[in-house]
Every structure is written in structure tokens, then in C-alpha cells.
Amino acid sequence: MMKVNRLLSRQLKKVNITSVEDITEESFQKLLKLVNQSYSTYEEDKNLYESTAELVSSEFQDLTKDLRKKVNELEKINNTLRDSIEYASLMQQAILPSPNTLKNFCSDNFICWIPKDIVGGDIYLINTLDQDSILIMVIDGAGHGVSGAFLTMLVKAIEEQVIAKIKNKALKPSPALILEYFNLSIKMMLQQDKGSKSNSGFDGGVLYYNKKTNVCKYAGAKTPLYIVHNNQLKIIKSDRKSVGYVRTSLSQKYTEYDIKIQKDTKLYITTDGMPDQEGANNSRYGIEKFKKFILKHQHLSFSKQYEDLKKSFMLFKGDTQQSDDITVMGLSFQ
Image 1: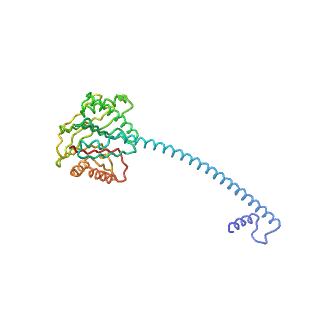
Image 2: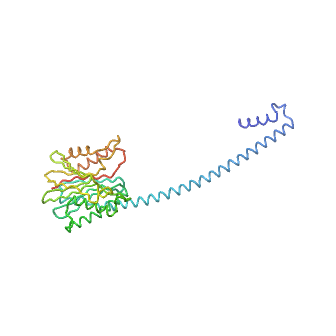
Image 3: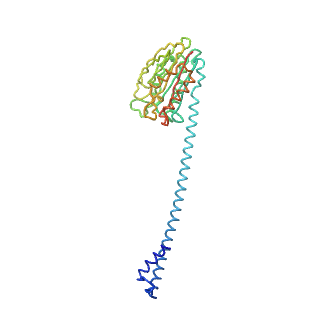
């Protein structure tokens, strides 16, 4: 009502009407004309607003419909990719050996394998060569996720060649020679010379154990072997050259160590995923923390060590995203 009174007051002022006495037939006609004009303008503005609102509403609905369609398409693509990666994960897990493979050689063991993504670049390989000897490899392939998983498939293919050659006496079961064979094979298969666009490879350790001689042989590429015995920790150093990369020479040689296995000796191999993990305070889990852990827990069963190690790692990591694939292996030979 107030709004109408204000509108009428403005029209009255336009025809010089300030009181009832000022109203004449002529002024009344002028006033009526002005009011009609104002009403017409109001109707036009109202119609324009309504038509504009309808247009905007229609365009918004079309835009919403298009957006919903695009979202549905992206969801379908994402689901297809996820299904493919999950299937690839099943394939990758299928090529991992069963821990039971170690049963005839190890009195106890654990394997902690945690990919960063659904699939990963870490892989462990276990092969019984004969009734007395076994070959164990822990591999940290370049990258993680899909690219890392592709490399693990290549590593698995080369490993099958290695085992065939060993059984055919064409290759000695020497960890150093096996790393050299992997290095040469990857560089040749991926054509990774100095001018290559591809640059893929791995860090890792190869361990050979013969229970008749009770001797373990080890060679590592940026992957040491940790030995715990009688409250003492010994580290078998690895070579500082990775396997297969462009900068690694075709003729790269690796150092091999012989280790006499004593009673209650425990061996550990880890990729860099766990030590390099950052926690909530931006510090790394670190290799020193890992070494303290295995020394402190040496008298516990490996199943208990596995539980406590995962708990320790998850507690340290907190809400921080996992940064790399993780593989840790603990072994105690009979």
C-alpha cells in the first residue's frame, strides 16, 4: 500500500495536485493518463521480466541437462578405467608367489606388500630351484600405478627366462649374475641406450639360499640386506647402481656376498617405500626407524612382527597419503 501511495504521489506532483482543491477535470484527465502510462510500463516490464526468467530457466535446464549428461559420461569412463585397473590388479596378484613356497626352506617369514594404488611397481618373486635351493627377489620398479605394473610384467617375463636358464645349467644361480642378466635384458628389450626416450628399470635384491650348505648368497641394486642375530644388526651393502636404466652400463657388474646362516638368524629386505614415507609432521619414517624396529622385535614371531610393523607404519603415516609402493620381507631359514 505504501508503495502504491508513493507511486500515486509522484504522479500527483507531475500534474501540480497537492490537495483536493487542486483537482480539476483537466488535471484529473492528465493524472488518469499518467497512471495508465505507468501501468502500461509496469505491465511491459513485468512481461519482459517473466519472459527473461522463462528464457533463463529454460537455458539453465538445458545447461543442467548437458552437465548431467557429461557427468554420466565421465562416470562411465571412470568406471571402465577402474574395472580395467582392478582386473589388472587381479592379474598382478596372480603372478605373486604364494608364501607357502617358502615353507620347505623357512621356519618363519612374513611378506608385507602394499601398492600405493590399485596396482603397483613393487613385486616379489620366489622360485624353488630344487629340493635344496630357493631363489628370492624383491623388486622396486620405476614408478607406481599402471606404469609400474607394466614393468613388473616385464620383470616377471625375464624372471621366467632366468629360471629356465638356471635349470638348464645355462646360468649359475648367482644373485650378481641374475641382476646383470636383468640389466642387459631390460636395456635390450626397451632399447634403452643413451639416446632413448624410455628410461625404466628397478632397484632390488636377489637372494639365493641352499639349505644343504646353509649358505645364503645376496646381491643388491640400491637395496641392502638386513641381518639380525643375537641382538646385533648387520647390513649387507648393495651396489649404488640400479638395473636397466639408461644411465646404467650394459656391462654393469654387481657385488655378491656369501652369508653363513646361523640358528635364529633373521633376514630382512625392504624397498624404499616404507622408509621414504612422510608422516604428519613432514618427517620421513626413515631407515633408522626401520632398523630399530627389527632389532626390538627380533624375538617375536614374524606374524607378530608383521602386525606391529604395519601398525607402526600406519600410526606414523596418519592421514598423510601413501607416497610409494611398499614391500618388506622377513625370512628365517631352517
